[in-house]
Structures are given as structure tokens and as C-alpha cells.
Image 1 (spheres, one colour):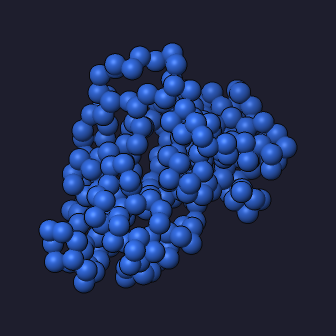
Image 2 (cartoon, one colour):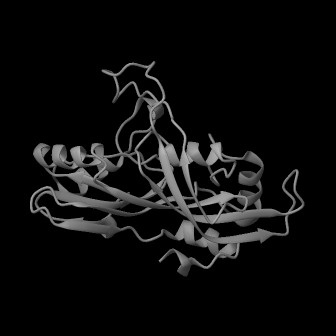
Length: 245
């Protein structure tokens, strides 16, 4: 359950939280059996209605922005749509990624019956651009077929567009699958890391967000600290968590 310590910023217009992995942003047909969501828990915590202005996947942790009025929600949502918001993520992927890369590969939207009723299911693929920089690498003396050892990279990732599950799908596209991703990831690595290194979450964290405040226009940057279940995995596999700061 969300608690007051999960609130990173709050004023009369916005409330920004660090969402834990495993919690939906809002109810979704994709996971219709799930009754809890960040929207519901935050509303109950602060005793006020909240308006989500962007999405994080259920399995992703990190910084998540809510507005406290419909007017503020529209202004922030418009900033997202206009690419006036900068987000950075930390991601653990399989293999030794390049030092830096820009992935330019169009993606089709994933249709959600609850939130996308007015949209067509058959829209063409849209522009999708993801940039990353490699922060660290590690090699484990464990065979994961077809290789005699297991190699991993920690990346700082900046999506320049906002397609559904963009980072996860782009990592799959370049064969550096996101660790702990059971839809687009590599099952052999996921299983090994779960069994031998106690990695039981998707290793994607929304680390920072930068945007202009919808009321006063000031540029603000909010950072969500890495949760313990993320840093514990990095420690176990030999990656210095100070590199993420």
C-alpha cells in the first residue's frame, strides 16, 4: 500500500509519487482481476480525487505524476503529448549493450478496452524513438544457453516518444531484453536470475521526470529513489548502485 513516504512532491495542483513495482496506475481491462491501483490508493491516502496524466506499466516502479484538478491534468497531459516532458529510466538488460544508441523503430499502440474505447484497434505503427547510455556491465559465471556465462548491462534510458511499453519493446527489438520482463524478455535469463540471484521483479525504474509546472511555469525535476528490490539485485550481480546517481 502507498504511504506518505511514497509522495515525492505535493502542492495545490500536483502530487507526485514513487510507484512500487506491481501496482497498476489505474484500473485496466488488461488486468481486470486486479482491484488495487495507484490512483485508488493515493486518493484514499490524501482524501482527494486524483487525475493520472501519464502511465507506467504495472511492473515498472518509479516517478508518477497525478494532477489534483481536471484543468491541471489537461495542461500536464498536453505537455506529455507535445513532448515537453523529459523522462529517464534505469534498466537492466541482457548482454553487453553499446555505450550509447538511439533506437528509431515504429511501434503500434497496444489497445486497452477500458481507456481506449474511442480509438481504433487497427492504427498503423507510429514513430517511436528511445535513446540510452550504458552505465555499467557485469558478467556472471553462470551458463545461460547458448552462452557459457551471463552478461548484463545497466542503462540510463530516455524515451523521446511515449508509445505503450516502448522501452520494453525496443529492448527486445535490439536483442537486449529487459530483465524480469515476462512478455518481451528472455525467459532463460529471467529464470536464472530469479533462482540464483533472487530477482523477482522487472528491472525497469522511472528515475526522473522534468517538466514545467502547469500553474507557475517553473521547470521542475523530480527524482524517484531506487527501491530496495532494485538495488538489491544490482548489488548481488556486482553492479555499483552509485553509478545510478
